[in-house]
Length: 345
Image (cartoon, rainbow, N blue to C red; front, side, top):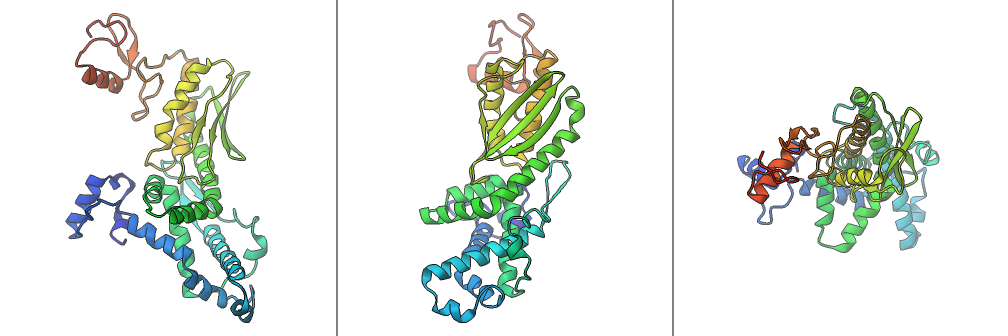
């Protein structure tokens, strides 16, 4: 787990991870498990350990009477343990600071959770080793969900037992998904503000409505909205683009293509996937009004990986393609002709 902490998000592929461990004399597993699996297992174990929670609970005299705990039923004990877990997670997240990444500044969680649990956080928490471990695990889980969503998602999907997957999903949806969603919204807005010069004619704002993340855009008198559906288990489950039924000033088929192209970005391994998607959509809307046409191969204005415009023009039909799309087309078709007019480049 200590060695895995030294891996950056760009080193999480199996090939690089295998080389990483071999250089340090660590034998890789035969199944080529993700390098962060030991860390995630340790965090989940700390957040589900009844013994650790019981020790922290017994030392928290403000919360309940230890004698009562000993005489309580299994259901009552489980409820008290859950209250303790929620209380320490809330305390950990309220005092934690995480960066939004991608040059979008810093997002702070301080005070965000205080309104929802002011009655419990107003009392001082017990400062036991067990409580510190629970809070450390909560901070690590938040950091993983924020900066390594794909790695955490893969760990969850590969859990062999259904009850383990259910526990992790419930834990994330109850305690970590809400603050991560708020941080994603703040980071997305910061990215839009930082890149405003790339779509100067568009005023873009990101807001959260229930389980929707809404990109609100305005250009002159035209007001537009594009939405992403946020599952309660986010980021274990990825956000999904919501295809609009109608769109002001832009043909719906073009918007549908843009939203479909956003899916691999939302499922990607990089942090701030919401911000990346929102900025790409805002740029696409601005480019549409500037008269730029979609690439005829991927039906998108900005390439999903390189964020470049279609610039490779056919000498015959004059249609422009992304370089990456065109080269991939030539490789798969074993020809170097235009995909539309079939004339040589």
